[in-house]
Image (cartoon, rainbow, N blue to C red; front, side, top):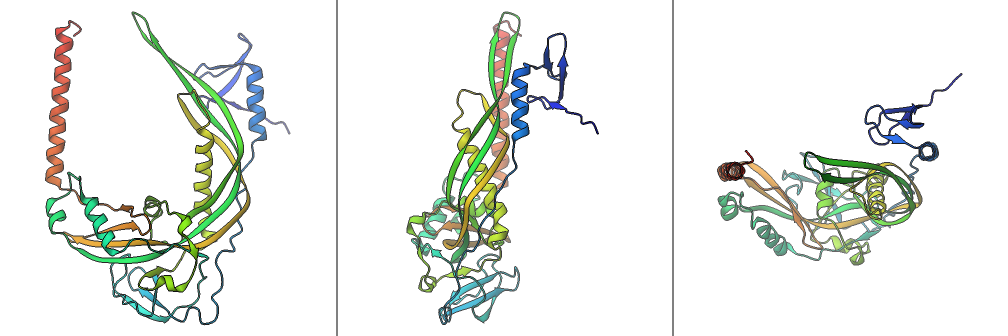
Length: 364
């Protein structure tokens, strides 16, 4: 059986072939020419490229000792199905995630004991102040929302996180470009040169966080990062007193894909930062192998603030350690419309002014 070898142009992806007239490989689509020696090296690199090998040891968390969880109670939300853990004195009347009533289920059991916990550093008063600061400077925020809106509920919640440690051995090839422009009396010229740049090495990652709650969107949780692990302590149930703890419903195995995604992206960005002198640098192929990958289970502090305005619910999340707060705000449509009209008028005036100047200069 015969095999056909097709060479792809690194610039545009088209199939390239040998041009006997110039004794080089040439792309018929973008007219890029390649020396045979350079293409041979490129082909050798493609042949030796490897796939990812990102496996983990996920024996995170520990077993509860006899009597250790006796003071904990479990609550289940009738609406979103979330299971929340609090102490025996917690008066939880509504779900901190969706705002609907929760039902006490009795004694807590059946989940792993966390390895670590970062205790709350900021209180409810600080959460309210952070929300008011969040309102500041928002020109499109309805004034009545800022002046009359009241917070429906503030809950301190410990969110479950899986923390991934590993050494990542990465081999990455980037497509880089270098752009040169010049002009003469008749034309403007742009020359774009393409380069294949390779980088390889080992990057150590410690405690890459992936939240273990499906109720908390990944982008929201990543927005309130980072958490300072230097404040973490060995878990004790006493830290839960007066707060809720979200029981994880995404285990360590299910969190691996997200951890791999974050590690691979970070490795690509780390090596790309070492490439200088190019106009653009974009990862083209990469392979990552993990060594000593393991996961731990931790609880991180977060304040959830719920408010309702015009029949719509707004949820804000604040890092209970650093005070970083995120959350969407409503937009005053009338103010937004005025801004749009103003910008349109401004752009039209600027365009007219430029056209007038060109006409006055004899160009138009």
